[in-house]
Image (cartoon, rainbow, N blue to C red; front, top):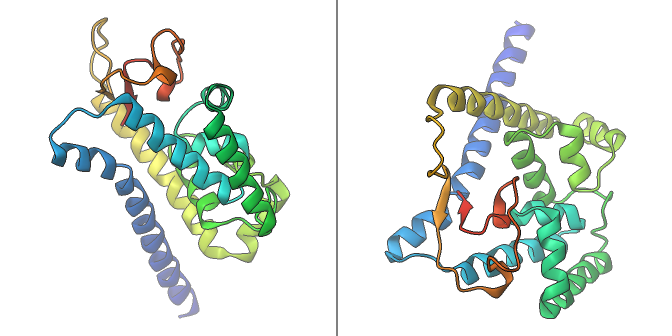
Length: 217
């Protein structure tokens, strides 16, 4: 009877974790849906500001520069270029990091919900969990301790791994034929932002805002 109870509890926890991952995934569609509702092409400047805001939120939650870049959905190189080009963004990111530091939200400290969400997204999109933990400044030992002390975290990690496997399988089944003229997964934007102009941004094979003509949905 005890084993049946354990199995039922595990199934309920797995179902809860899968629902949380589905909710996190649905948030990524919100921007696209709202833009579609406005019935207009998003501008590149809007894309930049929105991603900068995501990076600032990550910094205020104690994320490192690599973590802030991941939270913004851009390569770390692009984030560092923004810091060099845009003095106001550099000042804002430093202030956000100072805010986190003042309130004890340091890399390697107890992870915040933003850090956990970043880890789950990284795993769901293909990262191994040690790399995902590194993004938020958590050591392998600290990550293992977190999973041992908070079983729901382990359930969420397992759900992210299941989602990754499911996405990989779906990608193999649905992958369209490659063509020279089609860029799958990008949305066209108006090129109005000097930070993302063709002259200032080289082609980035990893996607994100390093790609000059659009963004990955």
